[in-house]
Length: 174
Image 1 (cartoon, helix red, strand yellow):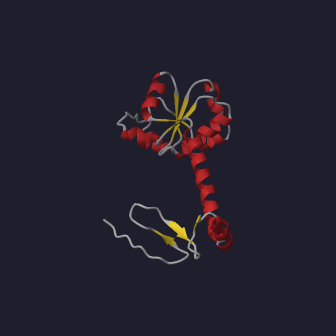
Image 2: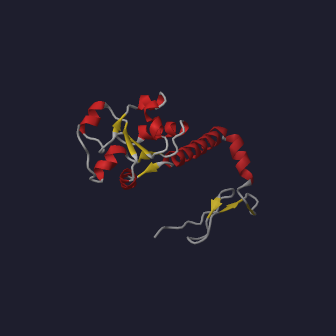
Image 3: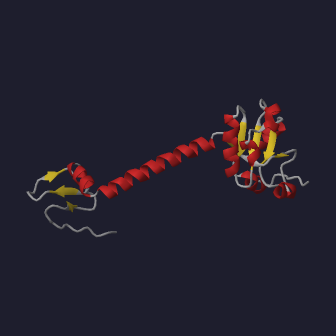
């Protein structure tokens, strides 16, 4: 497979064979752990260490947002079950997109109306609401806003109307 070189340079990582781990040989010939050198590396290369910490923070925030955005997100098949049980579908797309095709019995409501307080939806506060847009991004924000306004059963159609079409589910034109 690969070649294994046994080069003996003091102060470098060495490998004795293909199945043995690397080890650090100090200049005196004794084997030492590389961990004590981590603090020295961080001090000498602080921009790289800071970049690594920043990337880890961004990754953690991204994962946290992903988990919180997925809360309340449902698949098209789950949406069909809820709609058959009396849920209300809310289309957040433009009027032209709504007219071109929407979920049956969906109510058209621009996203700005939800930010303004969703007063038109107050009578359905106890019913399940399924918000959807073209791809699911705008509806995710709308669902969070509905949750802040006291709607306990607000859901986002994961993937939006694109996912609905991909599942070959019916659309109504108006």
